Length: 80
Image (cartoon, rainbow, N blue to C red; front, top):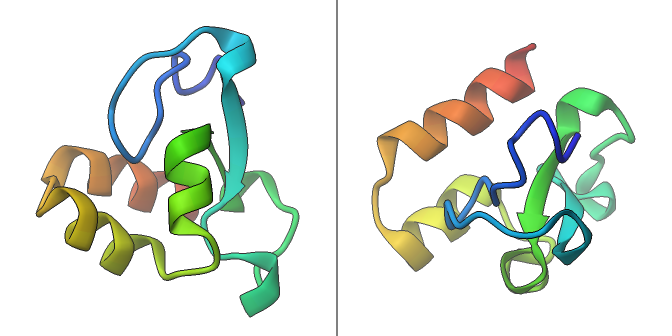
């Protein structure tokens, strides 16, 4: 998964070392998200912890503003 996203956090867009990244459930398990490849993305620890169980799109826009390219990357991954 980390290789798929080129070791880049899908939320903030920063590139990290492989070991510095976490895997995040876009739709949190606490809100019915499943352990499916299409629901898991590569995220830095800061973004993963800050997002928590919030809606990814609302959290991202609150935190970073409207970022069409990153939002599309996540949406496309969810739809795969």
